Image 1: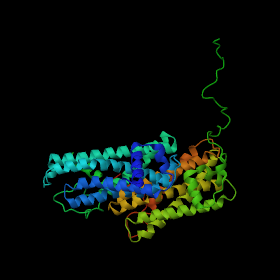
Image 2: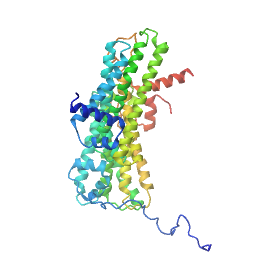
Image 3: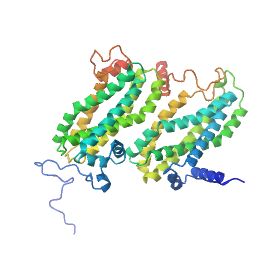
Amino acid sequence: MPNETTIAATEEFSTLLRAETAKVSVWTTEWQPRRIALHLAIIIIGAGCFGAAMGWWRAPQQGLYVALKFPLILLLTALGNALLNAMLAPLLGLNITFRQSLLAVLISFAITAAILGAFSPLIGFMVWNAPAMTADIKATLPYGFIKLTCTVVIAFAGIVGNVRLFQLLAQLGNSKAIATRVLLAWLSVNLFLGSQLTWIARPFIGSPQLEVVFVRDTALQGNFFENIWNTIRSFDLED
Amino acid sequence: MNESNPNPPSYPPQGNPNLPPPPILGARPLGEDPTEREPIANVIGAIEALLRQPRRLMFQLRQPGAGKIIAGMLFVAILCSAIYGVIVGSFSGGVQWWAAPVKVTTGLLISTIICLPSLYIFTSLSGAQARLIEIFGLVVGLLMLMTILLVGFAPVAWLFSQSTNHIAWMGFLHLLFWGISTAFGLRFLQAGFAHAKARSNSGLNTWAVIFVLVVLQMSTALRPLVGTSEDMLPKEKKFFLTHWFDSMGVKP
């Protein structure tokens, strides 16, 4: 028989996914350690399972590393931008506190992680059916397909998380226009930091030619945007 | 029934060309809301008010004894710009650990002092009824908002400064963060002047352009901020755009 805590956690999880914004907005009004622990657990388990499924193709150890890195990226993004997000919200018309902004972002990340977690068995199944990684794996159809599927799932989870965040912000501020402004600002700064953290935390799927590592020796050399810029410039030179 | 008015009113209504244009309308009088009249006890209260109740801060800046709040706000601005300066200096390390915060802080302060008289003149010419202390308070508000936002950007800036060796990229990133912060700061200043009964915003807008140009040129005059150099201050004088093009290896 499930105990009361388990039932309450399951109900809260359902409320989170159903986007009952009136209820969820009340959650942001106070620090509730049990609820925060639930959201952190969803992020760690959901994003962790997805990461494990992704990294498992290269090696079980890689799966473990990515299972640690994925939730870390989400949590560090939320914490790294917590102060900035809390300042941007009132400046853009949404008068919420530091606690409310941090919890709102955590809630949206929890929804994203829950979706990622739900898709992790599917990714795991795909990886299980994929041929073993060989030196030329990047040129094969399964590699491209798995990479594309992971990207689509991450994008879908991210979009749903942000739609839910928008609904929550609209509820908190009683204005869709203000919610849109704040969401765009938060999205920009979170994407900016998140993409760099993701860049530092490479590899995810991994490569058979390279050793299985938590982060590469060159993790802190270069950045995501510099790399995109160099790629664009290389196209330019080739033309 | 369909009588036509022989002297139809003109739209938009035309005022007497001999009189100065009316003040800009639309801003509710400060202090209308009782919460705006609540005194600000300390700097934490000033930061809170700046972010959440800017009208309260604007009202308090007009009250006798506003000097204490302004001094506190100035202290916060100095502290925050020094903190961000440390982040700027963390890219190169060494001497820049202390040189960058000193340069960032003094650069911002000197730029403000240089620009303050022109702001007073421009706003007075626009018909604004604001005392010098109020104007100074609003400018310090701009500085405080700008620098606390920079502190908000600090974790992101630090992460990038540890993971890139490209000086031009880091320079661009700091400029981007400074630009965003300044935009919010100038918005506060503009909101503050909306209550000064100015006839037009053109003076303030002109001043905003001047302020931005002065700070950008100051960053070039105090270089290096991000990278390193044998000299603490540059021997060669350069316009900031020339410096940027040089840093990017582009010939203007």
